[in-house]
Image (cartoon, rainbow, N blue to C red; front, top):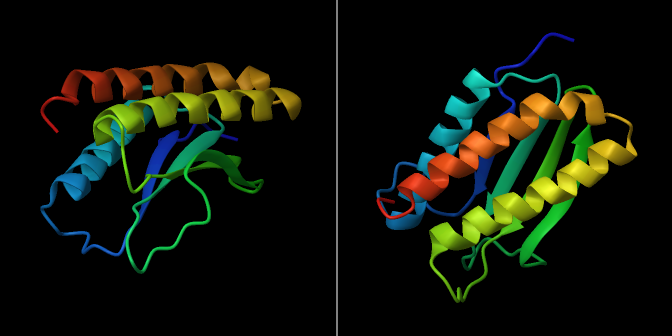
Length: 141
């Protein structure tokens, strides 16, 4: 399989209009941009998609925090689910950075268990660049 340019992806499940200019939507869109940039620099044969659930009256999620979602074998893509709590102790950017790191730990264990660890280096580099971008820009978003 050829290297992919969608090594890291960020999906959003929200009842808000995707063109909305509210702070949460702006932050999540920036995350999508940072993931695309990191993926272009570090293409990989496996991919990781962070699916972020934004709480609201119409979006009911049965969990809070981070957990593993489905592995799509045909795309070699692992989904990591992140549900934003209704009450945050820290800021949203800090929560999402920690959630991305926790999601990476879950993904790393999963890929190692499935004997796909050799494909993780480019994905790990992309994740590191993604987190670095989030940290550097967390005050501005």
